[in-house]
Amino acid sequence: MTLERVAQAPPASAGGAAAASPAATSSAATSPAATSSAATSPAATSSAATSPIAASPGAAPPGDLEPPRYLGSRRRRPAVSTAVRVTVPLLLVAAWWYGTGSGAISPDVLAGPGAVLGALGELVATGQLGDYLLASARRAGLGVLAGGGIGLLLGVVAGLSALGEELIDPTMQMKRAVPFLALVPLFISWFGVEETFKVVLIAVAAVGPMYAYSYLGVRGVDRKTIEAARGFGLTGARLALGVIIPTALPNILMALRICLSVSLTGLIAAEQIGATEGIGYLVTLAQQYYRSDYMVLCILIYAVLGLLIDLAIRGVERLAMPWRGHVAAR
Image 1 (cartoon, rainbow, N blue to C red):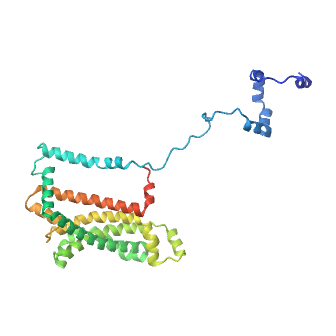
Image 2 (cartoon, helix red, strand yellow):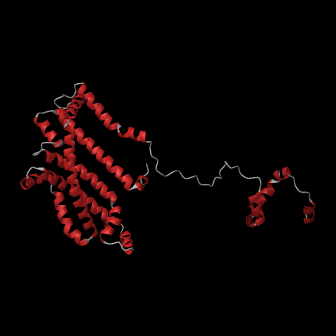
Image 3 (cartoon, one colour):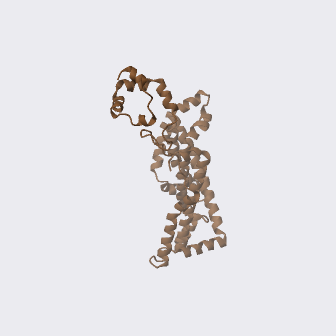
């Protein structure tokens, strides 16, 4: 067919275009010149972009990427989280109740929940429970405040200064290797069995964890952050209080949690010697009179105190470091 006949030929209809010759279609598809012309022609590009016939919105092209899945934190509802947390303690209480109620566990070995509740009622009725709790809380608070403050100061000094580390760290490592209960006879000969002995023993127990975690926290502070703060004129106490301690706050709060837990151990040892009130004194009375219900009650009181301490530290963490709730994927 000559060029004149092609020019004179009538335009093909839509049906005719659809029913084009397979040979022509194959030739157009495989011709490099046609492919290059179609790819580089602005008219073809504009026509394809403005064509009313387009792919349906719901049908994604085979080469498109899938939308990324959500990577943020998905927190459980408070009711569900509380139910999960209390599941294991409730199962332990149920096993305890069944074992003592069925006779599988002798009351002489382990008092049942009913006997423990009766002992609790006796202490509440006489008012001794509140007095004992206040006495123990005062001793533990003073001891942790003194020991934690000294440990924090020593940890910051040893973490910031090479000279401070050389002077402080060897002594603190030796102190940490010595069990604080081994110091009880020496402290009794120094301070007697009054309140000073009890507070000092708890303070000595608390100073070790606070020093170790504070030292690690200060050493973990980015040096560039400290250099930037010094560039703005922060030095000495302002640098420590404004930059270093806030940055090391996660380690310090973990140290505080451990210090409060260790203080309960020191409290038991301190209140069993020369005390007339306190939870440790109640443990001594239960041992002397062989009251297993009071023994179990004291254990439960210490467990509840440990739980309350942990909840209090968690509350401080949420207030002081709200960003840590989004660090770990839940």
